[in-house]
Length: 490
Image (cartoon, rainbow, N blue to C red):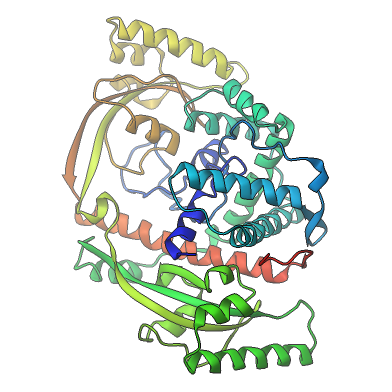
């Protein structure tokens, strides 16, 4: 199967069983995710992202979306165990349901569908990884309250432009019970909390790293990005609690594979036949990544290799022994508005009603819907904000001024980005309450040196988070007991 097809397949694994990460992170009042930060605004208004928490979520973090009718209809007759993960099992029904869903997404996107055997092998490994992370979060004693799940559900619904009642109808139409949906959401929020504690909180960005990042782009985010490396690996896994003799046997196997690869054998075929890594089905190919997104062991090996070269030695990790090859490297295309040296700023104002025991969300929505009707029929937004808004911006008619990408919490920013100038949103829910939002204007502006460093800091942090997250997941996987009851290649 072609690498680009597998890349799409990985991207499409963002269906109903995975978290809409920015929405859920905002809903449970943790640092905003996948957002570039622009510190130093000097604003105290609650809707702005707290600038002290400079966090971007790894793209590989699982996500949860909205189910489609017919998703959970498979017969119980095929519900046999296909894998054991520590003290739980993955059933054939789970595997086939997930694979069917991915096939449907690929066809809907007009993309080729991989061979069934390849698809099932990849899906099973993803299910194993999800289970390992969920168990780790539960063993760590992480708890998520019903109120936090309620807010997460509201955010998921809003991201999909529906309300919680409509979302529940979609869930139940898919064949999944509402209780099961909430349980799955709770597990994913637990994983996010664990990742924040074990990964996000430990990543720091230093001034020297920002200087190097900017220097690589000619002093600012330029026309091209950093060098990306396409790496392939063969993993010879060492069983947990293996004896010294077993370890030596696995090392010898890896050394033999290294000699074959150095002698001109087809690396992809060697990987497909011998590797136990998650990329085995696609010839061990990991895809283009910046050096900071590669596992540290691999980064040290490939940085000085020429494309097509095999690393001269086998590398040992907690998972086993690795044979590594650099397939290609390239200058990455610049990404985002920051890369162009400009950003789009939005002039926006809002009315906020805070929710709580004395102000249910439904009542706040009703009041703001009434206000919206008055304003759209000739009322004055600024006057309504001064009278009714419970935000610090009320005295200025709700005006938040010109805001840059990443300054506002995700749900607010996403709703704002969909509005045309002078358009007023429907009520929007964030962790601060319920808002009416009006966009007044937009403009393109040059990035100041300070803003360039802010965006560079966010990009460097995201690169380090991705690499740290990948290493953390690999460590969890290497420590887990996993027994496959089927051949993953069949």
